[in-house]
Length: 226
Image (cartoon, rainbow, N blue to C red; front, side):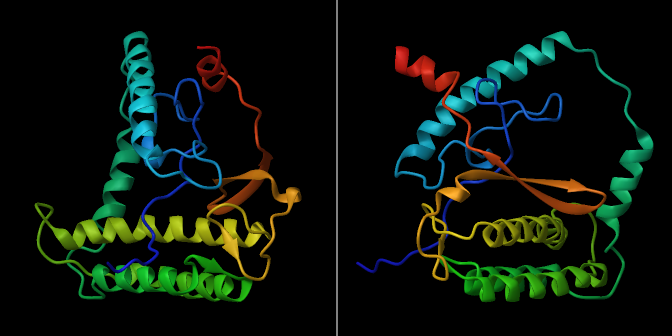
């Protein structure tokens, strides 16, 4: 049997309230791999299924409660048209295939932002991804909106670049090794970095903030009492 390390699960994600799985956006709930903060620095084997079952149930219940007490709001047509224009931007243009950029991004992340990281590799990857991001306007897609795999790849690569940059910026900010995050230029765990990194978009720029790891409250204490 051949055994090799691979990237198979994320431990970051959307910041949610531990008791309700609600996010900062009203009406948006998250659970499972997409939500952050459940597993700490390293996910133990088998925990992902428990995570989905426990927090999936909580998210569903809380979302139903919220849906019952709100009224439908008016749709902002100008925002919809703006988003529609962005998503349809590459149609009818001759240019780079989105699949090509997707493969390039995956290769960059695998080579320089993999299991063993260091500042030199992380900065190299960030520079290459910033250059890759400039190529998004050069993407061209043919066909229509139905069953268009290239269009799906275009949407993927736009989001993947954002996530990749957040991963790299967070890894550069954490000058230590902790759990699944390992840097060979900072191989030891440093209590100075015992915090969660919260990423936000402000003025069209990515902003990272460090917040102290919260003490166990709510669900964790309820479970202990039972």
